[in-house]
Image (tube, rainbow, N blue to C red; front, side, top):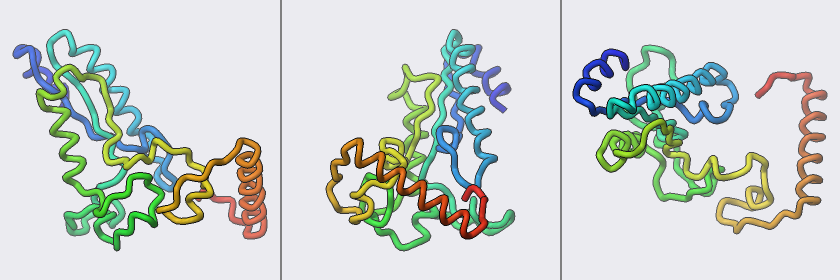
Length: 189
């Protein structure tokens, strides 16, 4: 599809190609190994930005983390719900690991606004970029559970000294190994 679109854009010496990849193109999502292929979409964006840039054609992508359709979790052929999976449940920002605390859940429109920006003149000098949209700061934090996470979402971040952090991580790994050995469940999730 992009090949055909590029054929029309090149003679005009302008145009924007936009892809939707996934946050899974940056990090692994347990239970969704097939989404690792989305990283290839990011690579295609880089390559096309280089190849088509001389013709004034841009290539960018958005990689949503949240605000995606609940239909991804439903069986194929299920009726389209029209809401994000976060909108389908009670929204309690303090019960989420997402650092950004908003009074509403991420929605389709949040991703659509990023897409509109990437194809608009406001991003005229951007090409070869993949924006992690609707991440709410997810990629800004480390993936280990910190004391502030245990105390609730409104708690101020607690300073953790490196020695304490090493101890906490070691204890977590030991507990996870004990649980795995006891249950006999060696699956990755």
